[in-house]
Image 1 (cartoon, rainbow, N blue to C red):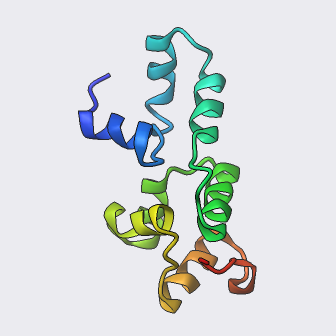
Image 2: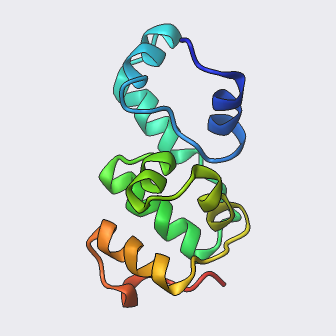
Image 3: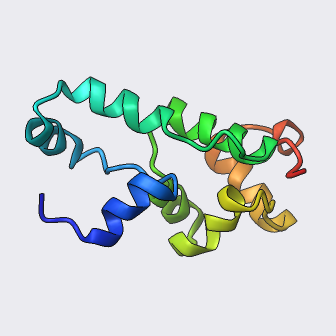
Length: 114
């Protein structure tokens, strides 16, 4: 597929998802329908996530965005949003406002991290 081992590790263990462009090739390599690859990647999230992380993953799923795409839309490095998902850390207020704008929701709709 021409992806790094680190990328596959992210998909398997850190809640990352294959990009939209890569999913058809991944589906072909696994001999699965592309929609099945999409569905499986979206259901593999951790069940120990905070309310904020679970909500944010749901928002990404509805938009078919990867976490990396969210980081790009917020003008952040991918590693900067990792703690939001792994440790349930919520972004600072200025970033929360950018997140609300990117997702087209009110800041009040974003659940607290805890």
